[in-house]
Image (cartoon, rainbow, N blue to C red; front, side, top):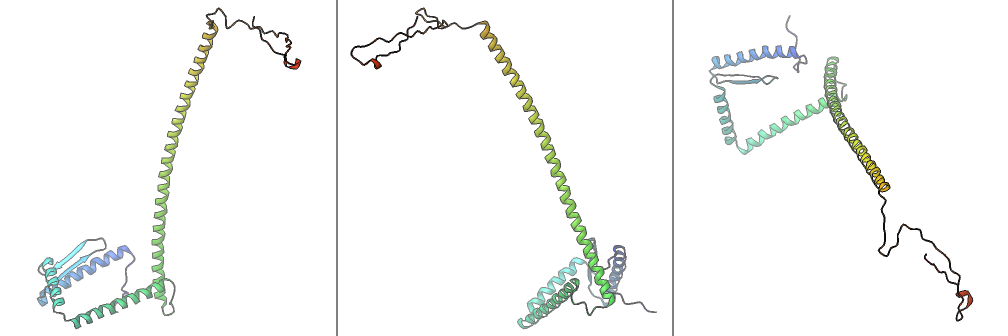
Length: 240
């Protein structure tokens, strides 16, 4: 019984993908070596794995094969006539249009459109692709949210430290104010004691004591002959 047809698409399981890469890489290198020996051809092969590891083979050297390829490519473009160059770019444009159409169809299928012509197996593969894509989106979302939460925690810790420092400064200022109030009260008490123990005495050179009591006496109004009686009342202050 022959082997079943293998669907050419990306292998989701990483272990199976690595095993398949190792087997097919060995077979590809073997075929390149056999082609160079059997047909006397100059063969160069370069393979990069998904992890970035390099595997290469060359019948002479990889550098010589690449230099010969670049030289041949330049000569081909120089010898190409305008008409053949136009046809070449038309083929390239047609190929790009086909790739764009294929990508647009895949995009519509991923959006759930134009699914009438798909079989059950195709729909299952499409569902698996969507689940893998959704899983990747969720993982990316969780990572972003986790980073944001971590950043908010760091900001909260910084704000808390700043609050503790501010409370410490406020407490220090409060203590300084209490000390200043104590000093002001002590200075007032000392001033009051000095005033009571040594009262100041202010005298005038004329022999009058400023602290002596002042006696006021109202004098009787004196009538004036030249002015009316209501205007002759005067208030006289006499100092004794």
